[in-house]
Image (cartoon, rainbow, N blue to C red; front, side):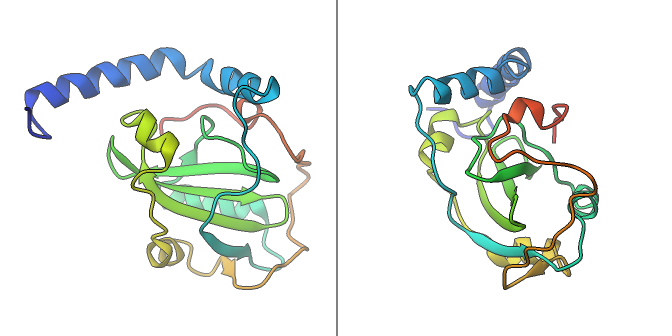
Length: 173
């Protein structure tokens, strides 16, 4: 059996990267269709609440702050109820930090395997961890422990269940 980091694993990872480059443009549409026809059921919000965007902060400013810390659009992720943005920061090809921003200003986040490297384990949530303190340190000054309903969307109207494919241009973040 090959050890992680071996030539065999490197070749497998390279094949996975090529496959994802091919399917990434259509994946969000296929995922949304599977949910729409009821073949895949996704409801609610995943665990690991971090808090809420601080009062009088704009979502666009939060997104800029997160981008400066290495987070980028994660448009292939499942969409939780009320979610308006999904961001991730890759640690490497195998692990990522994932943030979700919701219409009510709530922020949830966790650490997990990437869907590209470990699609089945990722889908099942194997290895998912809160990593709350690490995420709060990255988002220092932007998170409140109590709900704040008066966050600003800077002219953006966000539908409650916008398809991920419509949430922006795919990035490799």
